[in-house]
Amino acid sequence: HSLSIVNDVDRDANNRQSEDGGDVIKGLTGIPKNLPPKYFYDDRGSQLFEDICGLPEYYPTRTEAAILEQYADEIAQLTGCCELVELGSGSSTKTHYLLSAYQKIAAHSDLADAFSYIPIDVSGGILKTTVLQLQQQYPDLTLEGLIATYEEALMYLGKNHGRSRMVFFLGSSIGNFTESDANTFFDQVAHALKQGDYFLLGIDLQKPKHILEAAYNDSQGVTAAFNLNILAHLNWRFQGNFDLQLFRHQAVYNESKHQIEMYLHSQAQHQVNLEILDLQVSFQAGESILTEISRKFDLEALQQQLRSQGLQTLKIWTDPQQLFGLVLCQL
Ligand code: AVI
Image (tube, rainbow, N blue to C red; front, side, top):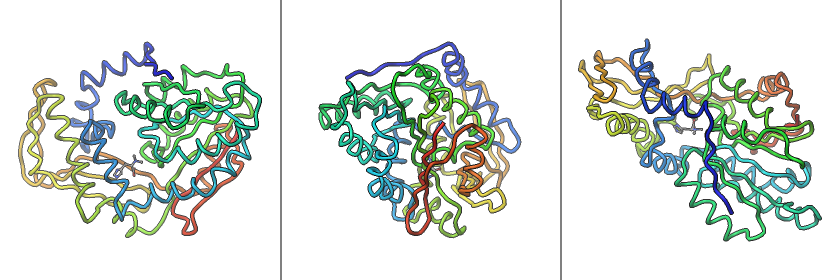
């Protein structure tokens, strides 16, 4: 097996920006204040997100897993043998359904490397563990993990692969992008696909406000801890003095924009210093920081958006309650 770090000039520019915290300065001096959601995912934040995935109110993870469990064989039948590329693979937990399905069809193929998987994640730690585990579980799997952002990885992969490829992006992470960032992302995906290649996308569907608000304001307070952890992350990374007690988590569903908006509300007027950024930020009582959007999709509109990027929908699977969707498209 192998693990590669993909690095390019843009990456260095991006890294420098985030190491400099330019994006934090921009967000905290913006109106309204906001923070890039990527700062959720330090080690503790990644663990808290794993915990969220198991919460009774957070239906997306188990619903998508059930759809994959039921339809992975059908997906593999439709696409035939292909190289599997996963964006944001994390612990690759849900991927097992796809891997087992593609392993079965690879057994009937005479292609060399018929069964191959390229997991991509920015977190090298989690990817290393995952690659080692997968290699033990699937000795016949050709495996190359890429430590990279989506953009870097898709650029690096290009479209000079000889065989069919399926890129997949699960968990409705696409919902954390604005519509225009999602278009940029689909464009980058298309850059790594040849005519006839596949893209499999997991999306959270529009549904009543009370279900969504419960999923993002869980009764055990795990999502609140996840949201507040973004401030703890800024404290260690940029020598900050955010007092987490002075902020309160809230997630609201914006029905006109069809998106969850996650906020941290300041409970008192106060000042925060981030020494490494040489930044002082003043908060009014009641003032909020927007830390995340999580868009909820309409299948018709999404198919149209994909089509405008050259991606034709082949088939859509959902759960019986239509909570979550899995869209297979082809370039
Ligand atoms: C990673 N992403 C798809 C999650 C979501 O549902 O938007 C992040 C999350 N935020 C709060 N709970 C989960």
